Length: 481
Ligand SMILES: [Zn+2]
Image (cartoon, rainbow, N blue to C red):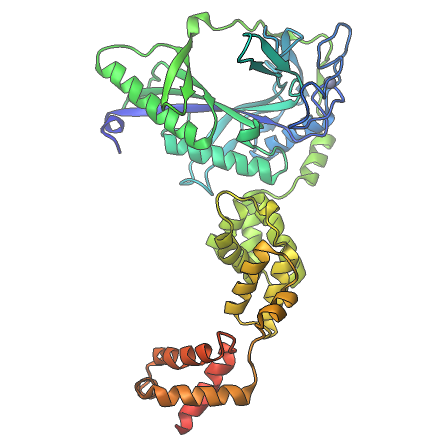
């Protein structure tokens, strides 16, 4: 703990915006897609043309309800939309449709079971709103271009209580939240594509006291590690101010990750007045019990539920199960492999130790050429004795570059395991003759000594001896040697 943290206790709250994984936008039929040519995904509604009327996206509301249920929040019986004044060209209506008084979800908690120390963080609310477009400043000419493809994409804004007490807490909370959102197919949560964004509120108070200090809002955070760094920096900045006899100003600051520092964006006194009022085009709508029940029934299992299934039904260790569960695309891969080979333990093993060992530099499992069919085949080939583990590893490494079926690689590399008993007996005998000390040790009960002899036999078979048979032969020969 830094000396600053011995004197000061940070109080941190997060506002997280996630783009919901719907097919279409929040209030129109334009597609919700990343990476299309600028302004290809627009219509009179999201362009804010006069007379165009919004129609709420049912799926977006369902995903918000799914989230609310997952975190144990309260789903509003009646939810409504408000207009929030917003005067920038990336939202041509001149206002953003959001939820002020009637958010779809209130309350709930997130517990850092997978990424932290099991701390429970309360949520204040989660509400629906529409995203704005993206402005792009031109280098030459000084003009600004605007791309409205993002304009109108459904967002869920998730506001935590100020329950976080350190930068590490914030990092764990964000990871836990993302895991829930991704496991439940609510959002991709890809910060690089902007489908997850977050703002952080930080204040500090002398340790042992309860009143909150004046808080600063940090914006422009581009990664979870960036969030952590920005919070650490802000804690030090505020402590230095207070310890020099100054005071913390209520303000919004922009984080510059490259420089590792923040700069003032605006003082709170000049914060915009949003002048919320109910959107006259969107009457309040009732969220019936039957609808909520249907959403609950359709929801995928939560990470903790999945952990329970992986350990009890599949017999995986807590550790292995967590390694899989922290990435939903790895879970899909693992479940597909298990369905093919019916051997969850070996499937998990091959994926987490062997395949992960080959994947370098942030490669996603969805982009790996080795597919679940390949892993399932290797598991089967080891099980039926065609390959020993060492050869199977060799095949996997080859398949990682060239994903032809294992059998082709086995043939090409001459890897079929030597299980011919007579041939192996001769080799083991030779190994015993060459290692009299190992034989003596074995007879004295030192089982580890077998390594020298089996190792010799493996070398003689160019790594293709069947280790189970080799050990069996050795045990038999020992009786008469
Ligand atoms: Zn549209």
